Amino acid sequence: MSRVEKKAEDKAKKKKGGALYALVMFILMGVMVFAGINLWEIYNNYNEGTEAYVDFANVAGAGDVIDVVEDRTYLKINWEALRAINNDLVAWIRLPGTVINYPIVKGSDNSYYLTHLLNDEYSIKGTIFVDYRDPAPMEHFLTICYGHRMKDWSMFGLLGDYFSSHGPDDFYEQHPVWQLYTPRGTFDLEIFAAAEVDSADESVYKLYFEDESEKQAYIDWLLTHNELQGYDGRVDVGPNDEILMMSTCTLRGSDVDDNRLVVWGKMVYVEDPNGLNVVEGGN
Image (cartoon, rainbow, N blue to C red; front, side):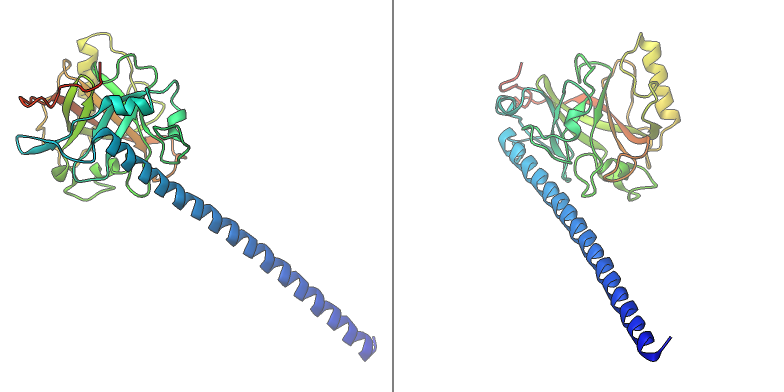
């Protein structure tokens, strides 16, 4: 090969290499732009969901504390205003001192509210919802409630903090009681158990109980498998009590794991002579 031919070949190789490099860089830039757009859409969706729940709280009257019972602050929920937005509403849940201040709905399946807000708009935050097969949520022994474990700790994102492997050592001491508002009254939700379970385990996600012995067996199982850090047996639970079961993913912002983090609370009616439990717009 002559010097001229070799020079021409080297030039061609260099040109080809440069074109390949440019193509690779173009592809990488495209991937980066696509990823950036996706991240921006996720960020916006998070923010839009957060803003929507602030609006729902304001409509509900849940943006401000209106009553105090035994040094605890409570809300008075405007059921009529909320049901004007969505008649699937069945309750409102709140954990004072945190971002948890949300409506609870019951849909026609267990999938729609994974990706929809109370006003039916699409959102990756979804809405906290009870099992659609439950004929009377919050009115019997066990009500099953589902919510996402969001990366910004919203929805049921804080449930994992009740487990020693996920949260601070004193989380249970700081937040032993939630608040549950229903059309029939206001309840303290006294947390007493937590466990990581298989989402397909029907013995845990149990909808029907034949008798008190089945209910007691369920309670015994919970206490035997209890992973609630710092729990000292302070909550007395029996088969005649009403329990709310709150279920979320083991991984933040993901639903790829078949296991779930579950926290159980006993519903305790709040006595209030000032009419806290007088229903406005409810049944």
